[in-house]
Length: 136
Length: 196
Image 1 (spheres, rainbow over the protein chains, first blue to last red):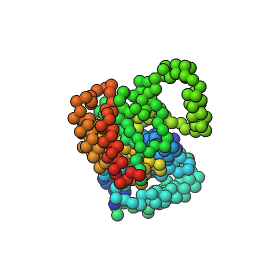
Image 2: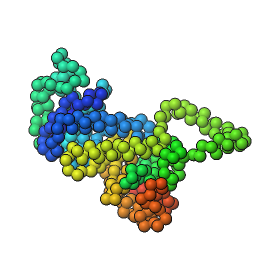
Image 3: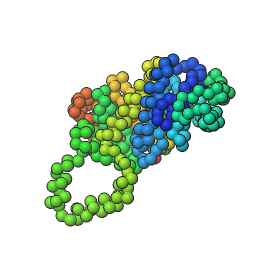
Image 4: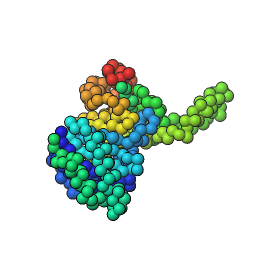
């Protein structure tokens, strides 16, 4: 039961926040995270088109053999992505709380430009309180 | 709990087989030359020139039938942005390939992505050592169907495709549709408890 990482992707597909917690996934450069976030943004859009029964949301959970990604798409187009181990069941509620922390510490910050990378100590400390080290 | 459709891709990245069960949005037939022969009769391209000859030469009951059909569905028409089958097959393959690369990059190991879920469907992937990819779309509440895909590979695929001398498996112009394979996959899927 571990949280490996958290990404926040803006509505254009650019990565605005990325943080690793527990070990378990490869260590990548920040450039590689940017590329992966853009890819995920595109994949999310395509998955809503492939539905066999009419309209569908984009992908919400993507599972692999040792981890899974849970994606929360907000009404404004921002995506919150949580990478966790397969056994983690609380990913969606954690993402809701991350969204609340984002609304409080980032959106209400008058010095923060929307859709730009997040550099906020308040947001970092709220995420620390929420996720901690990622191991539980 | 139901199963919508099954796609099989070979190692040349082409769709070689397609079957569906419960899709409510019918796939549009592929354009000529878009997909290989022998993928699925339901989505094979219609021969455009012969149908034009038919509509002019045939009598009015045939015409009004098709017209009625079109009128009934005109309410659906502008809203349904259904893709032709060959484009849809390429999109499915593209999504699977991109997700596979992303998962491999993220985990650092040679790891496979197994499935993803949206609000309306769940896509399961099983890849064999020979490069064949079995992709199944089901409803979102289904658990892992990888085992079922593996059963399809071990059973009907090996019996009616790999061991069939009349099916050219690694060709670049032919799919692998044949009646025995289609019937046995159908029987296997309909016999599952998750299928309603």
